[in-house]
Every structure is written in C-alpha cells, then in structure tokens.
Image (cartoon, rainbow, N blue to C red):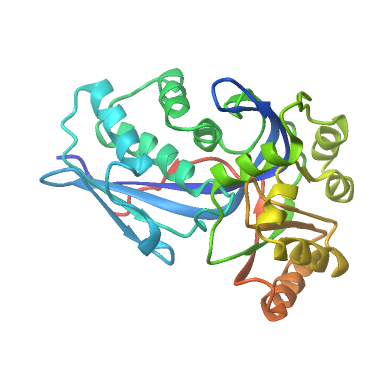
Length: 303
C-alpha cells in the first residue's frame, strides 16, 4: 500500500487578459499572462475502500464531492493511464477562494494529477500530464506548471515568461462568487455580434515583468472581462477605485471575477491596503500574497 501523498498548489492571477470573439466552438481566443501567487490548496491522496473526495477548509461547504469535481476526473484519468484501481480518498484542504477568478478548481485538478501520479508510481511523462490537463479545462495546464506564463489559444497554449524579483499583491474577495459562463456571455452581449478583434499581450506587460518593474506593471494591468464583471456587480468598480486611491500601483478584476487584485509597492503597502479594505465594508475578505511562485509540488513526507 502506498503512503499518503500531499501536493501543495498555488492560485493564479491574470496580470493581463485579452478576450477575442466567441468562436464556433463556444470558446474565446485568449491572450493572457498568468502568474502563480502564494495562496495554496493542498490535495492528499490516501488508500480507501472506494474512490471518495473529502474537503476541509474555509470554503469546504461549497465544493462538490462527486464526479462534477475536476479532481474526480483528474484522478480517474491517471488511474486509467497506469492501470491502477482508483480506490483512494482525495482530500482537499481548500484555502483558495472559489468562483473567484483565481482558478482554485483548476489548481486542485492539477494537484490531483501530480498526487495520483506519485501515489500510483505511474511515472507519467510531462507531455502525458499536460495532455490530461488540457482535457480538464483551459486553466489546468498553467496550474500544472505555475510560475509566470503567456497563455494563448483558450489559455492552454503556454510559453514561459521571464520575470525578475517578486511582486506584492493584495486580493479583495467576496463570499458570493460570479459565474465564469455568465461573465463571458455578458462580454459577448456588450460587444455585439460584429466584434472581431483578436487579442495580444502588449510588449509593456512582458517588459515590466522581465524588468521586475512593479510600477510599470501596475500601469499595464488589464482585463477585458472587467467591464462585464462590473455590470453584473457594480460594487467591483468601487473596490478598484478604493484600492487605487489608497496607493495601489494598479488594480483589476482577476479573471472572470469577482476577486479584485491590486499590485502594491512592497510588503508594508500590502499590509496597509489589507487593513484598509477589510475596514472599508466594500469587501468580505482581503489578504496579501506574492508572485510568481512555483507550481504544484509534492510535500515531503514527515516520518
């Protein structure tokens, strides 16, 4: 019987997110820059009589434990690939906010791929894991790698992005999430049927990351979905305005929202903004993080 395997996996923020028109497939062409940030879930795989998912942590009550959870699909993909009997418990320690534009579900799926691969000694190649990740969702390939990357296609075609140093972030979150599908539908409605502009990531974004220039990156932060998220939840604009007025170098809605992400100058500025946001009454929670951080890793086993 294999010993338990725990994998720690970070959340992400989209430093830049450009969204093209809806394609015939129903998906949108994206041009985005992902950055992993130091907010983590942990996935632990242990022996069991049958396949089960259990969840703990502040968001546990919102997480499905049936086949609708990407973790279920990820574990069964690995079992199928290596001929293992999927009689395991997958436990999710959930600290990444859900339905928050931080790819928590995709993070857990990526972690489950790595944890199950290690648990069953499957020794799947990186290409095999990447292929599985791509079938699970557009964000899963990046969550499997972490760090900082340019995403094209549906966000699943990745190229590494050079970065220097680390960036200080503050995240403002809400207890009530937003539906990704609803936000994409809303942006299509706002643009109208004739919209045909395909996105690309501006040079300024990549240059600021390569230089470790937080001021320049703050100016370059952008998310095409923000206008849709704000029409669904107007308070988001108040939160962005608050953060900028309080001295953030830049702010944006993360992914499909509703989380607002602020880039700040340093640790001290991060602490001050967390306190200000928490007491503002505009948001339910605020916390600081930094990025880029490395992707999912197996946690060393303590004897």
